Image (spheres, rainbow, N blue to C red):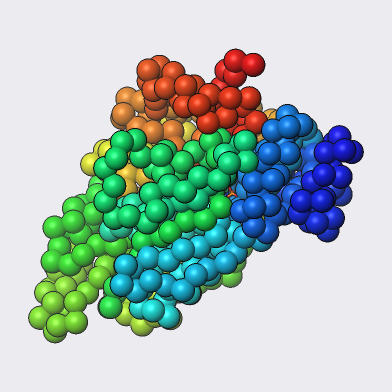
Length: 469
Ligand SMILES: Cc1cc2nc3c(=O)[nH]c(=O)nc-3n(C[C@H](O)[C@H](O)[C@H](O)COP(=O)(O)OP(=O)(O)OC[C@H]3O[C@@H](n4cnc5c(N)ncnc54)[C@H](O)[C@@H]3O)c2cc1C
């Protein structure tokens, strides 16, 4: 990288916060998917003012900037080249006291999702976005990807839980969006535009997040289930049940075996079907509500659709049950190269889609193992392919590409989306046309030009923007 640029960068963030070793440039040049990338240098600013000065410097030197947080992304959205500066926000980690009256909290972008949860818990409140990566993912990343997670049925996605954003434009100008107001119908909502924009429009430095009380009592059910018909049957029963549903997750028995063998976790169910459903519900404090739930459970068990099941009431049993579902991504990660698909279809068609996708996998016969799991209640399954046959990376990707060419047209017939919650990054950008119309994509181009006329912010992500200069 240009030595003059690096010298000025060191003057802004301090010499020890500019990293240039190959190992560090690799570490900050790729996300959890290990999509190959290496940045030219890494900057670790500590304040909004430093972010602003770095962006102005990058604009002056025409250096592309890749903003990042916890680097747990699953779309290759921080993949860098050696011409780029990786701008990591993790040192911006201040959390203000909770505003208990307004039920909000102001945080900097580098606060981890879990640190935020722990901070708010002391006030009896929570930010209800919950995902298995919460120990490492950061608020800036959660907002820039519009993270979903395991409680979307109940609380929606990250964009519902934000009332202000501070961001820095590529010119270095700092903008404050919405000022924490609950209502603000004064034209276009730029705050919402930044959410899910994957670092391509501006760098988020702070946010005011909305909070809510966590459920007082919850119950978790883990059911072993024979097939997709029965899974759908259970989902219908849960939807019409006399309690509030927080999560309806599913995973194949193959995923469970992977978690058991790679992470050493144990499932207490004795009789195993092809699928598992993990259901988290809120229960009121009154005994008649518990009685109604017990009756519902007994009817469900009598239906013949459940192979085996358990109800977890204590927090340790619930954590153990959730550990089986939340360990899947990690159990695959430690097993080798993985290709991930995070899809969304209308929830009523989810079972049909999964059956057809699995039939396609059997028909095409690619050399890799398929692991199916995800957020069934959101119509959002994850299809993961593991390179368990020891192919070279090139052979493995070419095998998966054969499947991908058939998968996305199938998804289109279900009116689905190529990304439910992980975003587009570089991994899905060739397929955005399956989810967005030409009219939408030409508006994307105009929006990008308005925010980032020289195309310096996270280039090559979401789509290939045509920049006029
Ligand atoms: C085990 C595991 C489980 C997961 N489960 C879920 C899940 O259930 N639901 C879900 O939605 N995701 C899930 N993810 C994906 C990932 O955790 C989320 O996408 C998360 O929101 C990314 O946050 P991050 O801080 O790691 O962002 P990064 O990976 O660092 O960055 C992601 C994107 O955000 C941009 N970005 C980051 N910070 C900023 C900023 N301050 N300003 C502007 N742009 C920025 C980056 O440029 C990039 O485009 C999971 C990942 C793992 C590893």
